[in-house]
Image (tube, rainbow, N blue to C red; front, side, top):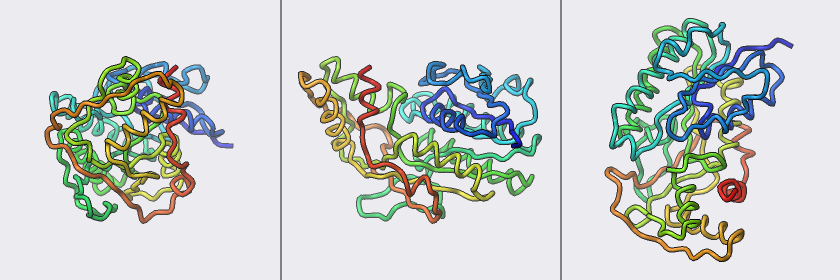
Length: 310
């Protein structure tokens, strides 16, 4: 069997680490290179660095030094990004460096090596929906509303420009909200669990009626890899989830699950000032038939809650 060199950026983060877990189940890996600067929400403990096929490079993808010792790369999965909306509002320039310049460097590597690239984006590039509006499709015009989503939309446009200008082999995936183990503690689910364990009020923006669509991170990882090996170049793949919930409904489900393990807790909720430019509703559909999307699990927070309780 022929074996290939893979590169995954952002593999010490939440989604990236699960992508590596799924990739390492394959038999066609010669070497799997990981580039991650170990920024906010990333940790070496998230990665399987003990597999002899894995080589970890602690570098910022925006720096040329990240690529100095790489052999020719066959497949690239680009997940590294500054992905926290609140932080992008307080420090937008950091978002621009990672999400735009970092993507440009990955595109140059793709062009140089003739690699197959999947650039992992977000449904937030489409903007937001009102309550009764239909789901976004792959043809929806981009209308980002935060520095984070704007830089991700810019990265998508860079990818598409390299496809047109240089003929690189690349696809883009756009996914909904992910849940599962290893998510950064600043995100909604681990924040809620942490507040419950500390017997502190759970902060909810506005009235809690903002709507999000959710997919388990492992199902998302499988979809990314499926697109890498079976997807078409110059194509966008939306990856929808299995459930839509208001933020308040999600918090209720987290509380319910935590109570199964720790019935002694006393939950309380505190509504706080809404986030600037807080998108109301996300929902995506897809025209593509991905097996990993069709076969994704029903919504279940069990493994997520167990991970944080440990």
